[in-house]
Image (spheres, rainbow, N blue to C red):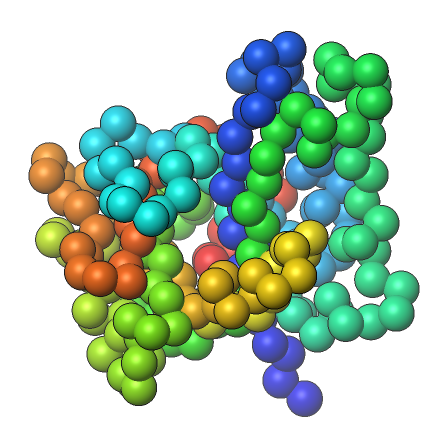
Length: 224
């Protein structure tokens, strides 16, 4: 049986000034990511920060979270197993400055799993991309387009090293009734160098943001 591979995409922001960016990074990279890699189904991680060139959110869009973490997932059906280790990952730690030591009390996260649909590679690049343009596509905007056409429609101005389209699987911790809003696709465009003026596709239902590489962990040769 062919495994359904995919991607865990997590956008985050600090919500309490008591949590400094330095401590947030320590928690993320020294505590949280090792737990995720320890599941055996998430072999790598790359962290990014929002580029100053990212366009501001349009009316009705949520403010963009400045931190992005990308995790390839080798088997999405693992998430449906009764004893899935992902849901047992600790979210409390003594490193955190708040009394509860619960990370959700000092930071907000938008975590979504996606299934890989189709990808195009124009040049072979080893290791994590130096720059990403992430394009979230609503179900309404996707319509009945074929995956290849949808990926092409999301292409930025400029040629990425690699472009991959993923379909929404589920969002852990999402509020009841929000699944329809979150459902859709994400196009991930990877660049080694980002020429000036390169931005994501601009059309209704396409929400794009540009991120710059921060750090990587695990098997960095694994492609997303």
